[in-house]
Image (cartoon, rainbow, N blue to C red; front, side, top):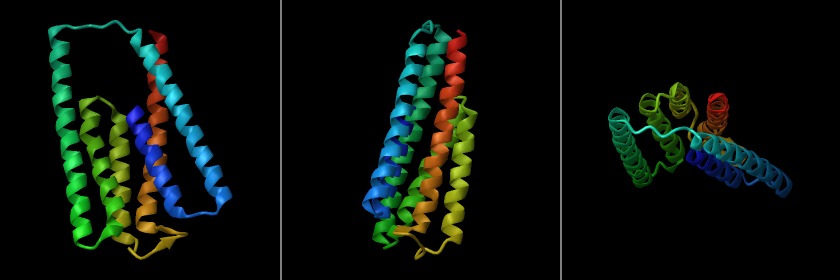
Length: 184
């Protein structure tokens, strides 16, 4: 959860930086992004505190399930990192830097699809599929030379959608997790 909040904040700051807005909008948007991030971090910490109160069960079946989850998570993470590096380097070498952001967002969003099954989090299917579709459609339909303000549109659309949908996912998980943990 904290990783997802951090990645979302990073993408939001990158968009803000590349937008090259005037000082007042940049500062006000930056403050808003920071406040949203701090609130989500605090809510995550609160949920982690509630989760620490859960009893630790270490049956053989649970240990084996946890080991299997860890193995698949690491495999998906390694594939994601390799994909991000290979795609970014290839796009730079081919002089298609404008596609780096949408392709990287596509790779990151695709990694949520198997994670949904591994962690039994259906909301990850929503995030992975919707953001993947947005990234693909943007690359297919938006001209690479199109600008939205100072942002390259082909990068701005999937990036802003990724940020917004991450916030929705985070809020959903926090709400659902906190509701569950307060019942126990």
